Amino acid sequence: MRWTIEVPDGFALKPIVLSHGWHQCRPFEWHADTGRLVRVLRTDRGIRAIELHQLPMGSLEVTLLNASSILDPAETAWIDSAVARILAFDIDLSGFHALCASHPELEAVPRIGAGRLLRCPSVWEDMVKAICGTNIQWKQAVTLINRVAELGDPAAEERHRAWPTPEQVAAAGPEWLREKCRLGYRSPYVAELASRLVSGDLDTGPIERNELDGPETRRFFLSVKGIGKATANLLAILYGHYDQLSIDSATYNFVGGKYFDGEKPTDHQITALYEPFGEWAALAYWYDAMLSWWWPSIEADLA
DNA sequence: TTCCAGGGGTAGA
DNA sequence: TCTACCCATGGA
Image 1 (spheres, rainbow, N blue to C red):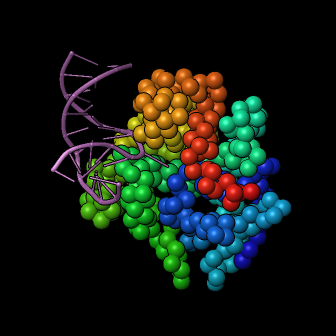
Image 2: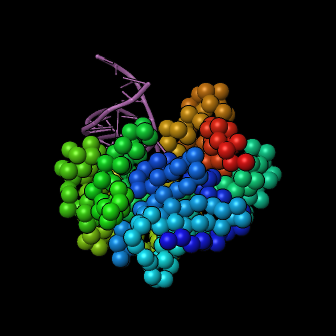
Image 3: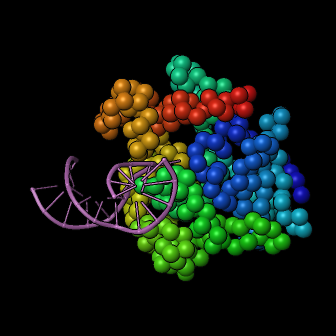
């Protein structure tokens, strides 16, 4: 089964897939050679694996990988809305793209259709992955995340698994996360997050419905144990609030190397550097780092 | 062996 | 608000 989805003007699939490390984590699967993004989704009818591919005229082609499944219009519409969430169709980048035009170092951003950041279908999944990425090398974080993903339900007759639900993680418990996933001291944080979602003590609805402003969004994420300032800011950035940078060890390395002669800058110095970008500060930093670091290696691939 | 990674919680000032 | 100190894990 195959259909197409219309995309916002100037949208490009590859830049958002490669915007950060989520595409390396199951149940995402990025095939760089063919430019296809596979994602497993849990609908109210079952576990579906879809493959996204951008057509030459811009729109997205969706291929259902569950060969024996036929979707009704309601389920197809649900998948379309999930794709829109993952690929941040709702984000209006026109202000940022206009700003990039007057900054030579960011000139490539609008030209290649970059600026959006890849999200998971649920805030729950974004939060777990963010917690797993704290104080750890990213490659190792991917290993942790993929072990947690093994808890998810498999699609019938397919190798794909959905991301586990909060109920599944809460039932598995902190010891399972520690011993089987090797989450270490992060395991009680993830277990508590799952339990709070199951009990209704925490509700991600306001984030999903985009009802909160930047400060409210950051306060929401900070209320979760295991999520501190850097991670809360990162998650707020994923949900469209760019006025506060997420400063982590990679930020010190990049900004120190490029602007402070190799010396580690203070948080205040970093903030001051991108303050002129105002509400777009975090994106300005993000693509400053991206274009300087590893973007050149893939830029030819994007042309 | 020691250091530290895409930090955060906690106690004490 | 700021600073030590501790926290699991495994790669470098």
